[in-house]
Length: 128
Image (cartoon, rainbow, N blue to C red):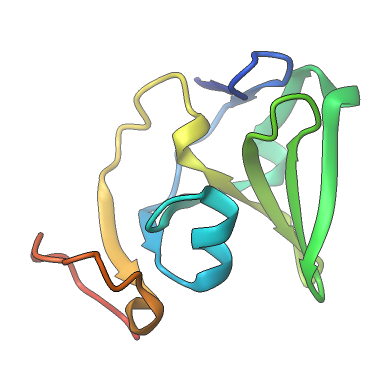
């Protein structure tokens, strides 16, 4: 079982299954959402994910049509995203994990939008 939480610890979650491959997204939305050069995410089945504390602290924002970003209303930590077209899949922000996911980063996405100060030289696959 994987466990995760927001920065202040108000929202905690558990995952019963395995994560799919972790990807680093360099699009401008993910950069702004994370406040960093990219956002690391992985997909997990809705049926394997559960909020175990602080559900009332979760807030949601529709960042673009059909994309709902969920975050802690106290500390602002981004936790996961849900697409209206595929509500059975949660796109987890893996930086919120408290335990080792057992998988590594598999690729960089949207590198055409990457921050100009970032160099990608880790040899991982890249998509524009």
